[in-house]
Image 1 (cartoon, rainbow, N blue to C red):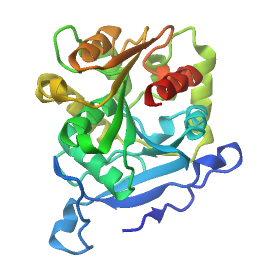
Image 2 (cartoon, rainbow, N blue to C red; image 1 turned 120 degrees about the vertical axis):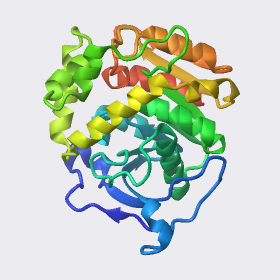
Image 3 (cartoon, rainbow, N blue to C red; image 1 turned 90 degrees about the vertical axis):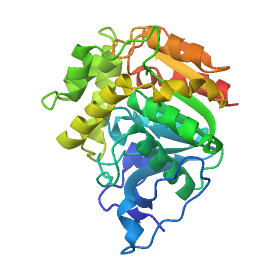
Image 4 (cartoon, helix red, strand yellow; image 1 turned 180 degrees about the vertical axis):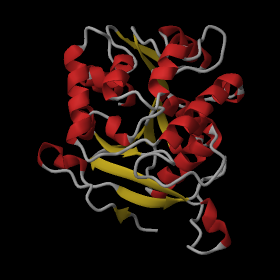
Amino acid sequence: MKPVVVLGTAETGALAFLGSVKRLAVMPLPAGASEVAVPAPGSPGYGKVAQIAYRQMGSGRPLLLISGAAASMSWWSPTLLADLAAHYRVTVFDLPGVGYSGTATGSFTVDWLADVTAGLLDELNLDDAAVLGWGLGAQIAVALAERHPQLVGDLVLADTGLPMPGSHPMPTSASRLLTSLRAGPRAVARALFPVAAVAAAQAWLKSLTAQVPDVVTAQAIRAEEQLESSIWRGGNLVAGLHHLHVPTLVIAGSEDAVFPVADATALHSAIPGAQLYLMPGNSYGAIVQSPTQFVDALRSFTS
């Protein structure tokens, strides 16, 4: 099916490169499958179809970005996206129930979200894509690589963790801040940036107001909070790590208080052949705090 342009979402001026938000009917791709047909509207299987909103920009090798918990695609800094778009065909999207995407049409699990992401890659014909996940998005990316290795050319896991020896679940204080229904962007910025990174935090906050609004609802925040908790209670993702044979880069900010460096170290050790890249002086928002440093590392890894 052809995507539909969401009216009123076209960016202008310096942000014109972001284009408009588009929405596409996506059928979750079963584990191991290489493709799946989207049922016709009104047919029995159409109820499983997810309406996924996305933006695309740039040219080159496909790069898919998966957002973290309580984040919409507007969280990706335009500075970062512009740097990436100079080297990649970048796709950002809203998870089901977030922003311009439709509500979840399946059980809201990390496996289902991975299958939806696989369906999006299939529908957009993003072959040999580099997949970058941030926080919860990186956990979804792990599930994607485990269930659909044929769709992932390179795997980049930023500021995340999984329940394994040496790892620590997200501290209660950080979890409450990121999932609080009362916390505004300035409060969230405290989790993303170290105290000393005032300029980076202000630039990120300014970028949020400059873009067409892309709201994360209370329902989505609660669902993702429950999903994050379930990931730390189970071991399914961890059990499949030693079977991963996708080139993997684990990135972490040295001052990350959401997913401490120990989480990145444990993840790096558990994935065969994985590389580890620490960003000194950065926190949970490392990839938007220091975009040039990050893009250089990404280009080196994917080249």
